Length: 129
Image (cartoon, rainbow, N blue to C red):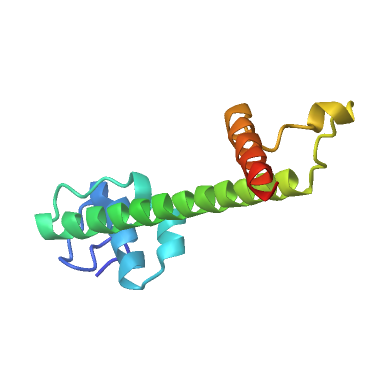
């Protein structure tokens, strides 16, 4: 078996040498080396049986999925950190102060309730007297 031969079907086609090299790296479980050698852009070997090309394409698709999942995880981590920082900034921000203290004074009861309470108090005073 020459170095350019497919590790699965022993194909020696010169046009398939890059695919054969990638399959050899994958057989050795050298994923990083296969990525460096162009696994994600790899085309199969036309002379190899479909099973060899399927292995190569499945490995490439698995790496694409893993890389996409890693990117989603990184984006989520950044998004959660940004939201946490925004919440903490909102908590630590000083409360706005009103310039006029009288503007803060709001009636304790609505006017209709205050009037009803006044009538009830007047009635109670009348009963005592």
